[in-house]
Length: 181
Image (cartoon, rainbow, N blue to C red; front, side, top):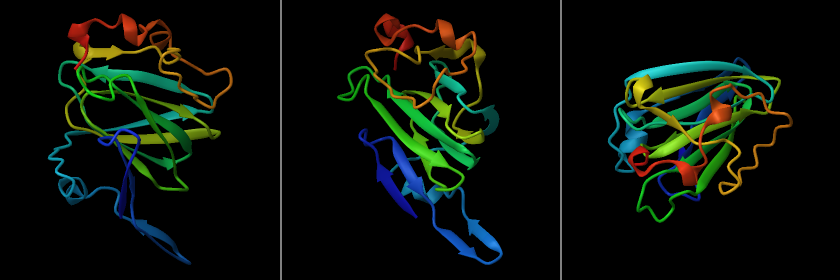
């Protein structure tokens, strides 16, 4: 297993060991020790699964109440996974970390508390699984507009399919201080 920091040290790309032979492959998709070895003490309490078609863009979401760290993987398909630092006072506040993760490369992305998260589906469809360190809490849900020019995210999708809710999220500069970490 290999853990690679992104341009934001706390956002990590995890490359699990994959054992392949003529039958197929085997891999551990999660081992608490992987994060502990990096001094990350996290307990995941909820697993989520989404299915989306090509050009779907979900995000950028976070919870200010019951904030969630996430461990994201794609068992089938390919996505661009994105995290935006919303930690006030952080030297990387407002910066974006991203990684291409897929069923083929089997990479995962760890996103700590304090970040907004989103992804764009680059394959015909994708299953996205993610572990969360706290439960979904709709009253605490917040977001940042996916196409905020200050974030300058290259999503690699044409004519993205976006939910009505996500089309009305604020730009980062318009997010109230109480709604940041």
